[in-house]
Image (cartoon, rainbow, N blue to C red):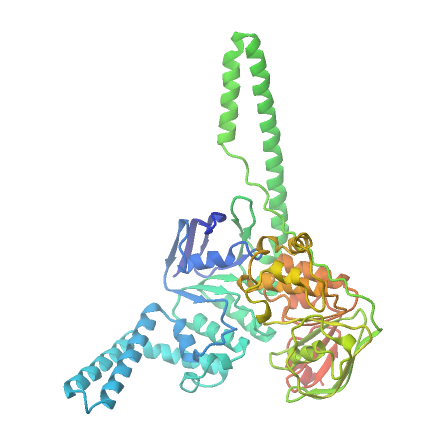
Length: 570
């Protein structure tokens, strides 16, 4: 049975700042420990320490059993790697080494065979023997059993056997397919300890429910980083929170489920504040005692011993240590003002996105909060992009409030925006090549055609409000996914959008930021339309457009996550 033990780990950044201090926790077999905390507090650094990508400045990490790792980038792979490459990357180091040996000796054997005219028969025979030895070693190490496992995984995730999926480019898979394939391989595989970084990102709700069921049933030791409150609520047996502190971020373990986490944390912080208050009161009393005895000893030498005793008392009290301060509160304050528009913000008439949905009609009114629900690939994000471009035949007043122009969406029918409706689009991919190499201050200072530039003091102020003040001089591409998301929402605020179009806005937001976004949406003056698979977030909406598996789009007064249910009920 595997387990993970992290003991007194600390990490100091290159500039000398302490990021992590005295981090300790254990994940035993069958436990599912959720790692949470505000963006930028060190979750990614801690997982990289656990996976031995970087070394801690102090402390140790011990893993009993084989370690399997799902990294955050799975779901957004856009290189030339294949399905076979992805599955092999999730296997043990021994299997990766042997697979590389098979590939290398096979290539050498083919080279020797193709150049038989110039190479000796002894050379060709030697390469053939090397290849045969590599194949035998692969089989002896369970390589063919691993290929059988991969076959099960590709059939489950992609609907085809491994032999047909092996050479397929991973970039041709959707984000959800990439995640489902990797999760299947890790959860079914040999590893006894799993590190899962954002395993629920890119998954639709049926797939998230599948993931939750698999995690609950697993006997592996699992550390997962997630911001999905429904996943946390169902899955986590413990919650490990990285908390911001002035002299290095620390970790607190809630030894219970997410359902009791908030109350437990508030009670703990109140207890810490009370302990600190009492310590400071006692400290002040002892300091006053020392001051008084010093004055008296100056008058009477007989009181010198009592003065020394008071000094000793103060020294021992201070050496015993001050109570840990209450963690610094997060200060993320999202403000989305909006503005008055026509009562009818969006009108949809016989709209059909080519190859994705059947024609449908709808009206979205000023002040509406509409969530678009349905499986991946059902057309939700395409519909949002069409609105972001200003609709079927946009006027100048319907120009998006950013320079990011949505790709053309093929459609028939019509979707029109009302007067004074200016769409602000939050794109799921966070792809902004126009900001590459630019710091956040650069982007805010220069402004664009939709928003005025800000002086340094003004830019710093709004970045502080979004919890980005410490990252003001960082280039956009170096930010975490959550920081990038917050910055994009900030630009929507500054540009004056009156229609918010949000594509999976909570995917990379930490819990505090997600709650701040929900509050800002509630106060926004205008209509809000969001694509989401976040069940917790979706509850804050009032109307739901369900994109069914058969291409129909229907309205519901409640969230429906099984889009096939809509088809069966109509």
